[in-house]
Length: 315
Image (cartoon, rainbow, N blue to C red; front, side, top):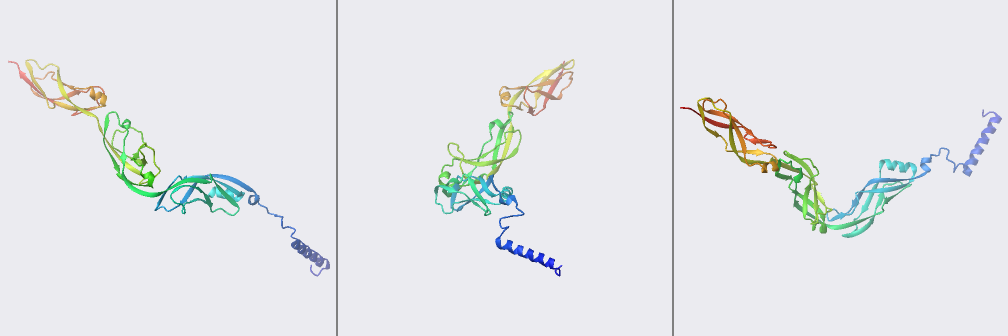
């Protein structure tokens, strides 16, 4: 083709065209493969972004910082969408150059690409910086009486561990009046159980205080026992002994028994009755005795009595 005069002319023309285009930047503003996601702008609000606080944790205690914030991201569509999915950035509240006191501090957004901007909503946090105080407290644990079954009473409540370390600002620590394990379970307690409870600190008006507690949860070991009452036992005989025999004496092996039930039932009972069946007995002996338990009494100890029955022959 190069040996052909027409071919040489076409090649020369193409070369001239290329040099003209290159010299005059004809396609400088034309993107033949334009990606709208790279050029279009977008704005997205991302909720629940955690906050990192920078301060001297060995010397100070900081309160008033939200754990999470909402961030407004604006910029190139593709980058904003990617950051919305990956959350590959962080929110910083830098308090390292702040003295104890109350401060309004701006959040900063770190880790964003150049074509994306980020704004925290709201832009500032009102924080309090105090000198750090650490103190050990014994834990108080209370079980609501309403949770204890009607036929039971609390025997013991043990907390493990029994003490916690509380860290907080000096003025806040001075307000602590109670450190308590707060149980959230409301189910009825009728036997031994172990529950986990969150530990909180309160002032004299029972306002929850902003402090750090270690450990933050403890084990509550709860022991209950059944309500009971000791009452005397009276006996009654049923039936007739054999002909020509006389019932001489009946003696129970227990004068009192322990009965179990709810408090209202027990309060109303002053004694119980045991029925001794002597029907047809012709000689002395020992018999098991059935106890007539009043209504709502769940059981007795002992459950069965013995009666020594003396039978004499008529003369």
